[in-house]
Image (tube, rainbow, N blue to C red; front, side, top):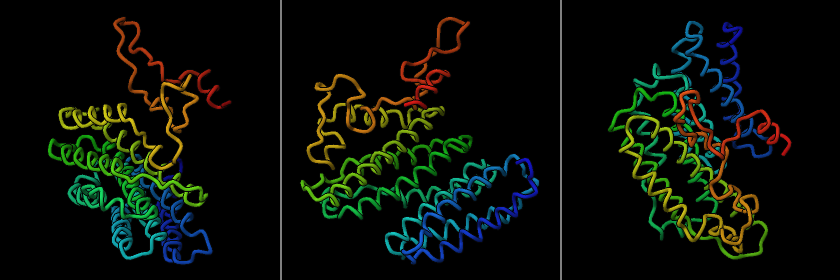
Length: 314
């Protein structure tokens, strides 16, 4: 941002290198996928500067990035599983950068974006169809949903003024379908094979990330004046999560079925997210009756200097 005249040349270089690595995705011997994802994040970060330095950006650059993201989504359906995952991640990273640039670009393409999200977040498959899928296929389907939800959260965060009742209702439906999809994941097989256990653990990690993305999108919708749209769905999801007798971790890792009554502290829980207790839940701070204090800190929020230092030491 200090040298805005260099933004467009840097974008051109990053786009050129990105296309080069995308063309070589079929070569499994070199880490072209990681290079492509890193360059896509760089392009996304540069595009987000656009609202702050509009005189140094041409509309052709933004249109080219949008066209590249769309072409990658179309190509992903014809590529092998590994290449398709990279293409989807790169595409949604580029779209996320455009969404974070604000409503100027998004307003004219909101219908196209909603169509892309509906394709990436479809109605959940029946339980029988889910049970017939192998771990690689399920992980791919979760990967698609996670990347689409990451872009959706950016849309809700930076383009709130474009939200209408109809748009919010469609988004809430997609979030509900995603929650149902995660809930219908089949139980992992009981085995001692380390490769199968590793695959099941990876599937669990992606499933947890998807649920976290859904929670974040619900929270961003709740910040708007349309609580009647997503509020009931969010409430039912929260209730079902806390009363679930079969936690998500017990589905994929046999023998890992923690009982909350047997734990002394939240730190001794082995579900990798402390039964939902997180320092990221900063919106639980409540208003204070005393006018001298604007808000009362929630017990789960760590924001003082000593708290930050303690987290760094841990």
